[in-house]
Image 1: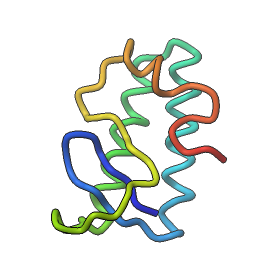
Image 2 (image 1 turned 30 degrees about the vertical axis):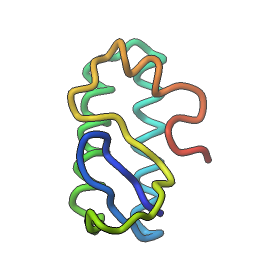
Image 3 (image 1 turned 60 degrees about the vertical axis):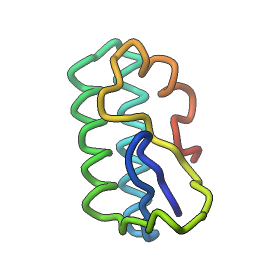
Image 4 (image 1 turned 45 degrees about the vertical axis):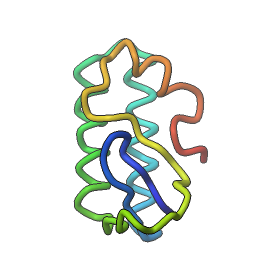
Length: 92
């Protein structure tokens, strides 16, 4: 799967990492729905860190299409309410 972090790079993640990405995505959705700013930020930060550390950066000249676009790391909690809803960024 190819995941882009908005305003950053695209990363190729293997299937082993995808389950953890989905768990963090779902936890971020649950935190937003509960109004838990701190819980959201912890899960969102962990999600970004996982993509950055487990993913392989795709070269700028590679025109592969992203399967998922994650908002940038400066996403506010209010903005998260629009992004992290329902099934989250990564549908189950």
